[in-house]
Image 1 (spheres, rainbow, N blue to C red):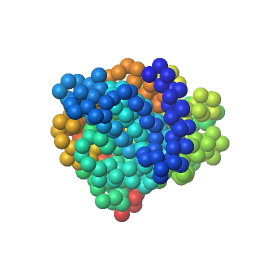
Image 2 (image 1 turned 135 degrees about the vertical axis):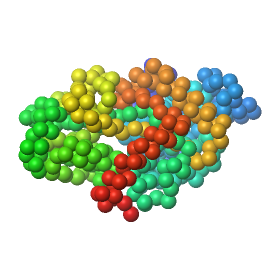
Image 3 (image 1 turned 90 degrees about the vertical axis):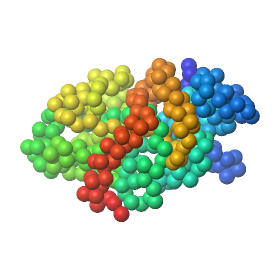
Image 4 (image 1 turned 180 degrees about the horizontal axis):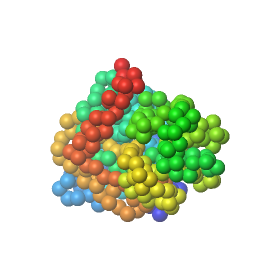
Length: 352
């Protein structure tokens, strides 16, 4: 299966767009793949051939609620991981695109689902920004947060012919010329927007800020010299980087990016700045998930993340890196991120 994964993902995207139009008569939307699991098996621990004996595993279809449209980076992550989970368990793992409210609709639906391990949702920075906003009637801690699976590095990028050739040059210039340089960002109140605002604050710079509706518009603005720089995720910048229209001054990560496209870009720490931020993606389940089911999910995700082929697909297809944080460590990780997100949103008047 995995040697044709990229073709499968590309096909899944085109199918999912058509499936969305048929949702009312065909049930959940999104890619569905059967690996021959027996949904009527009376033994709850005997589904996938690769799953561990004695560990909970589903014997019915599993649904991953994705709060974003087909074709986006969150959807691609969901579909990629769903295929590997399906192989591991031997059951269908379906991606259902439940859009709206910047992911809030899918997360709310997940929280209201039975805690039986058959329904999970994609968690990411929006889990925390929505919690801090006061616009939803739940907190991220109300979920059973299973794992962080991948990190997408935030990239500091400029137009290819920009006078700035390093992160240090850009920061030094901004410090010496306040409010002259401009940054573009997308999704006011979203995680990437907050990461950009944190960058501005931590660097102690004063720059002009220009808001756009999407990450692709931000990249277009950089390419067209409407703004001087941006800090976005690799998937949104990949075409510009591949064509040479934009250049990456630094990745906001602890280590070099694993992809060939970005491996030569220095990290922020290499440039002399202690600033690290990534857009992470993982899985959360309804609250009060039984411990045996939680352990089964964590075991499956751990096995998938340890698969070298999955790691390569994450790097090559998503331009991301596998970055496991599991169970109780996941709760601590989310608490740590929320500790800077909540006060920053209050400072920016982004809370209800």
